[in-house]
Amino acid sequence: MHATASVDGTVIAETDHYEFVEGNVYFPPDSIKDFSSTLTPTSHTTGCPWKGEGHYYDIHVGGKTLSNAAWYYPQPFEKATNIKDHVAFYKTKVHIDKE
Image (tube, rainbow, N blue to C red; front, side, top):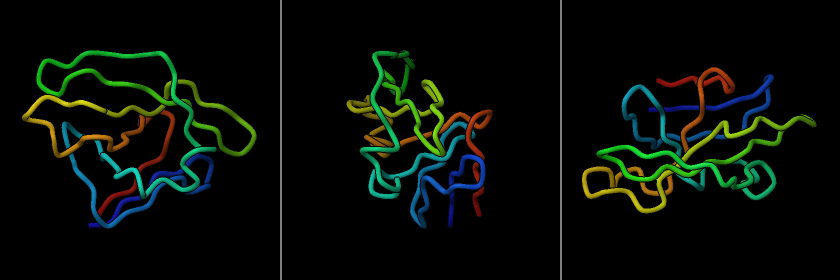
């Protein structure tokens, strides 16, 4: 099981241990390359009836910013604890490869 996330050919996340939920790869936080300068928290949130409140990040790579292009669940509901703090990316903004 291997997955990468990239923007314009720059890999921003890579892991051999991820969660796959509802068609999305959830990357563990330690798989994000240069986390603090690649991802910046935003004030945007959404709600999911079984995962909880999703929080969002802007992605900064190659001199550009992709607004609210990644999300995570800091306090997921019980059925989604396996994705706590894992980061998923919008496939329309970030290229995801998974095996």
